[in-house]
Length: 250
Image (cartoon, rainbow, N blue to C red):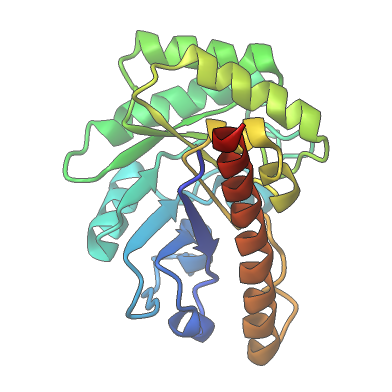
């Protein structure tokens, strides 16, 4: 079941005021065009999840502007607890100038996974890409063939979905296809989806990467919105806690 929610930060001065133990930062928000700028989160942050920033980069360039080695160096500098490999998102609207089909994008994710996992000293998170259930299962087969299973693996291309049933179908199929020891992170899973008991219990963690509350606001509004989000998240967690207690009573 979900044990951690990583709050997505934006690489600005507001980051230092977000008092939350688990945070996510995208490499895209730190990229200046030539290098990665410093990242300064709140002093109480216990874990940093470094995302490769694929969706943002592909929206702008169609390709990553940095290498696996540069991402590795950034992860080491941040002392990141989790680092997602450089994956290739498969949303229908993603930039496809270089790699048009989802199978091509899955294969490119596999290639980057091989390069990234060859660099030691970082807790890599292999990303399972695809859009349909068959594509995700194909990706898992290819990951298994290449020996790329990691202790925590992430499901890509979830944050743009609107259908809870479609997300549930994909997440449960992936959970069933993986060894039980592997923990699953769902990128950008909406709070609405987390209310679903099957989704909630299939995932180990998720993040607020799909939450757009930060971007158009002044700092005080961002922090107010953050508090509102915390309350909504707390309500979801309490809901499942109550359900668990009811099951025990019954």
